[in-house]
Amino acid sequence: MGELYARIREEDIRIPTYHIREDPNPPLFTPLAPWVYPYPRQDEILRPRDEEVSYRAVVMENPYLRVTVLPQLGGRVYSAYDKTAGREIFHKGDVIKPARIGLRGAWICGGIEFNFIRGHHVMTMSPVDYLIRENSDGSVSVTVGHMERRSRSRWNVTLTLHPDRSYLQVDLKLYNRYRYRLDFYQWSNSSVEAREDLFYPYPTEYIISSGRRLYRFPIQGGLDISRWKSIPIAHDLFAIGTEADFMGIYYEEADVGMVHYANHYQAPGKKIFTWGTDDAGR
Image (cartoon, rainbow, N blue to C red; front, side, top):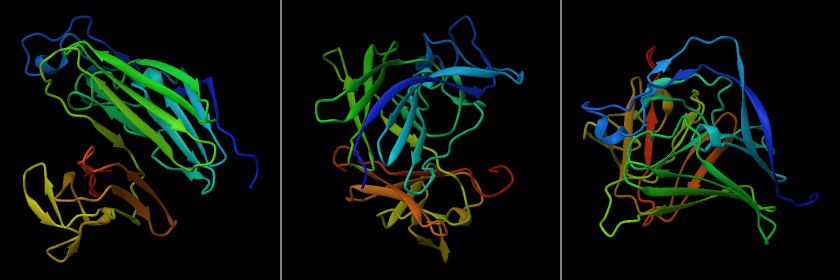
């Protein structure tokens, strides 16, 4: 094995981008107002102008991984490149092309999106605070975060890369400045490539859909729903009754996969979302 190291740097990267025009006024007296106000809507997605936009990126690298974070796009992990397998771990969009899915409208898939309070969070397409750090143990970190103006609470996500480890460490901190409890949820949204050989080795016997329908897992009615190719339409599938600390995906033909590991008492949720295999999903 060669030299063990962990390095961090900032650099500008250029990505073709569909522009967004923000409403100059925040939404008032609309169904979404309680979750969006005082942030303006980002509904107007403009046609592309064959223009590349410069983004300030934070890049962390060790012998195994190269991780690129974009603070200008909600602090998301834009790329996580596996040097051993020679491939991206997550889906990496070559173009920033929003769809109207987020709380404020615009949203993109790809990488890892960190969400707080509700839904695809209000800052998912906007700049957040960030801080880079070289740690005394040889690791490197970037912290991204935002003070959410509706609740006046703050979230921080710290991503750390160690010299001798082939995983990305994620630490979350939530700050409530008030004496009363706040109603919110936190979830991390990881996008992976949809392929025929993709399946989900989830440690559960039952899952429930967003429509509250219960399914056996992995075999439901003779169909193996742990495989991407088995689900034709868009579905949310939530694991229930699991006490395992992991969830993951695996590509059989490529013989590569990914595992998320966390204490299930602190991070109890496990969810699969698929757009489905039919034309609408593709």
